[in-house]
Amino acid sequence: MDNKTMGLSIVCVVLAMLLVFSFVNNSTVPTGNDSEIKKLKDDNQRLQGTINSLQDDNQRLQNSINSLQGTVQELRDIINLGKSTTIANGQTINQQAGQYNSWTVNAQYAGYIFVRIDSSTTNQNFARVSYTSNGGQGSHTITYNQRVDISSSGGWTCFPVLPGTVTVYIGNSNLINGATMTVTAEYWY
Image (cartoon, rainbow, N blue to C red; front, top):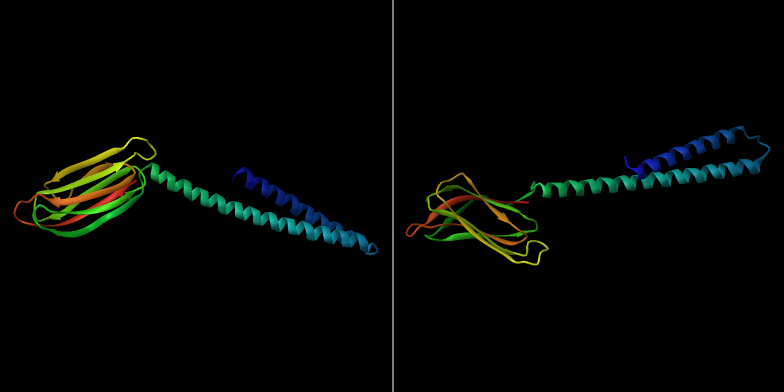
């Protein structure tokens, strides 16, 4: 519990005690003093309004705390590369010889692109990732263009990425025959 919540809780308890004290005094005041009774009832009503207002403030603060904790957790996930976006999920593609398919990803954070050839009719597959980035907030432009030949199915190939527009290519290097493959690609950040 943070200091604001604890402070509001203490104020609520004090006001509740004052309300009880006011009620006790109200019940023991002689009936002949109507103006004093009215004053105590008005004080009681005012204190009850203050308690209700403080409880509302307390609930709003608790909602803000919960929202901030959610934001903190999301940022922790990003720092730990614990969030991902699926680019292709077991997608089947048919290609002619020497062709490729491409996907564009808006990478908001530094991270990794993972590519896997789940299955293929050829062992001459490749994955390539390219982008141009200023490295987030930096003044230097970074150009990246990396290709990895993939001869077998099932293993992941990993490419580092910086913030920017990233293009993922998956294709085949066949000279004559086309290829049918099933691919999976993910962006982790």
